[in-house]
Length: 543
Image (cartoon, rainbow, N blue to C red; front, side, top):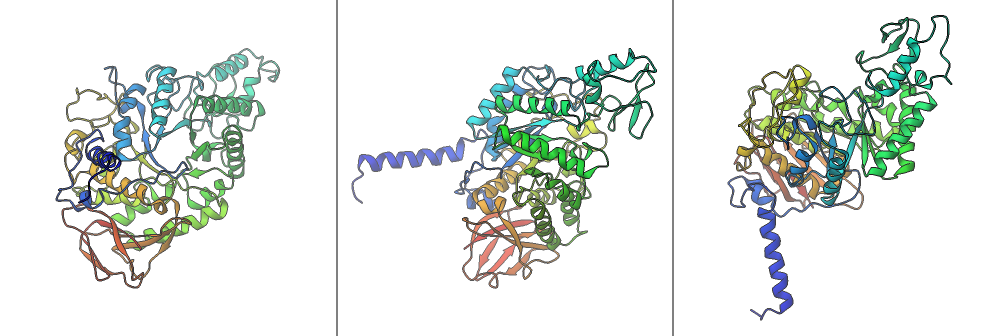
């Protein structure tokens, strides 16, 4: 062996340091490469391909229940800051926080002040510190922007109500006397979706709740306020917005909703061109496509999500595995026609839905894991709700879906939250995070590995889907993901409890197994063109 030069020696030291850090610098009890679980050693050298674009892996946090830093039982911004290493260690590179503005409710979707932070969560300085620390880690941050309605204690509404209460019954309001009346929609008739204004003969539109009056988003003065709000937060360093209830902006008026989304999109992009926008459009595929004509970056792909969506139906056997692939291809064609530059926003659960672990009562882990595997391996900007990575449960009333992050089985452990008022007792199915960290077959480890694979192959998030009909069937989903400038990847998923063997020679004679995802200690094998997939496993192949 030749003598080492100083340059060689320093290079060797750097390599050893990098290896040591890769194995032990994640802030958790990482699994060793000698694990009995194939994916731990097989995928260990995969590195994320870092690109500053909208194709990210996003972690949704309900701040009230995530991590408590001051011992009052309520999650806060500094609690989130304390867990950034945990979040980044799983591979997430974007955060969406549900509303952080002042509000009297636990959910904060009735805003009192668009320019402030709820004191329960901390201060503006705390929020700025969170932004800075996220950006240091390459994590972008989305602000949840609620524009359909405000709180009934918002100064705009309070001013309008005080004016109307002092207005003689035979007199019409005058805009110059109180412009805030036009920020909302008032009527002397009780129209559909309107509720009485106590102490007057007036009614106001409040589709969601009497204490959430709907804004009049066709009003120029209201739009001027919105322009100021987004300018404030983008100047603050926010990277984009999650837009609440975009199908309700103008009730029953799809074209009006798309027009207002176009206004919001154009306004934000004029201030910060790389601002990212994702809208909550809880509706069907054609209606989502109609909203994409606004030019918005993303809309949540609701047809795949929740207990009645495509992913659940595939995993419970109601749909064939091949239907998952066809649905991805069909959705892409529909949305791309409406907005060629769209970025899909797949998700499986969120703060409004029941949690994944409750969908499969008899499952001990594999089905629960694979369901989220389907979501995370869809193209676009993939969203994961906090606690899903450890299989938390929660269903029924709204508060149950926002139970405290299960850091520890000890409810008094550091960082544990009490949960929203009136939350019922939610019995967890899988162990707390502290126990899952050292288990190579835990849900936590599965999520970490799936995201590792997602980020290592750029075509997975950025590419278009080509079904491989010769391989796909009722049990196996197979597709190629194409993206210009990146290597194609072939993804083959066994979504059932029987081992599957598939001949891939018709796809290509020059394939190699490049990543594996296991839900058991039984490994994936690829030899002589035949891929052998144990139950509930995923293989990624390249040329």
